[in-house]
Image (tube, rainbow, N blue to C red):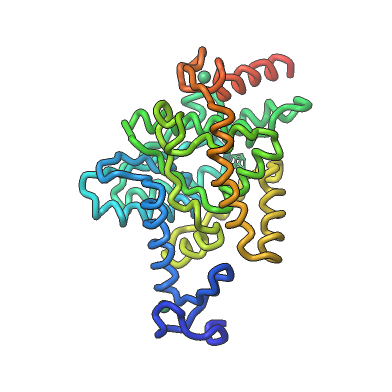
Length: 317
Ligand code: SF4
Ligand SMILES: [Zn+2]
Ligand SMILES: [Zn+2]
C-alpha cells in the first residue's frame, strides 16, 4: 500500500500511491493528476495540435477515456477565450452498452456547459449497429460488426464536425490504442494506413485534422485519472467486443508490457519513425467518393462500400 512505496518523488511531502514503472516516479494522488494534465499540455504543444482560435469537436463516446479528455480540454480551454469546444457523440445503436455511454456523455456536457451534438447510425445510414450485426451474423466470411462500427463512426464524426464547422477533431486515443492500431494495420496488411490520420498528413487539407492529446499516455493511467477525478465508469461491455482482433492484440501487449515495462513506448516510437517513410512511399491521393462525395482514397469510400455490401448480404440472407 501507500506506506510501502514511500514519499511522492514530485512533492516529497505526501505518501505515494502509484509507481510509474517506465519512469521510476512514485506519485501521490494530486501529483499524479497534475502529471497527466501536464503530459496532455506537453503533447498538444509537441504536435502543435491546436491553435488559440480552433473550433474543436471532441469525439465523446461516453467511456472513461473520452470523458477524461473532455474534463481536461474544458480546463485548458478556459485559458483560450477564442477557442471553442464542442462534444460529438456518435450513437451506433448498440442496446444497453451505448445507451449508458450516451447518458454519461450528455450528463457531463450539461455539467460543464459544453455544447453537445448526438448523431446516430440510424439517422445517417438507416441501420443501428445491432441491425447490421443481425444481417452479418448469417453471412459466412462477412466483416465483423467492429469493422462496420469503426468505418461508419469515422465517417459520422467527420460529418458531425463539418456540421459544427470544426477546425479540429479531438479523440481520446491512448498510447495503447495507437500501438494496437499500428499492430492491427500490420496484421491486416494495411501498411499504407500507418500515416493516414496525422494532422500534418496531406489528407489534412480535405479531412478535418485530428488531434489525440492522450496518444503518449498509457490507457491504465487514464483509467486511474478518470477514477481520481470522479469520471463515471461504464458497467456494460460492448456485446461485439469479443469478435474483435483488437482484443487479442490488447491481451498480447498487456502480457508483453508486464514482462518488459516500456515496450509499448518503444513500439509507439518505432511507429512514429515509420510513418513518414510509409507516407513517402505511398503518396496517397485523395478524391471525392462517387457515392457520397466525402473525401476518400478510393473511388468509392470504405463506408459506402460496406453499406453496399450490407444491402447485398440482406438480399442474399
Ligand atoms: S467493440 Fe466493436 S462494435 Fe463495440 S463499440 Fe468497439 S468497435 Fe464498435
Ligand atoms: Zn506529490
Ligand atoms: Zn462514400
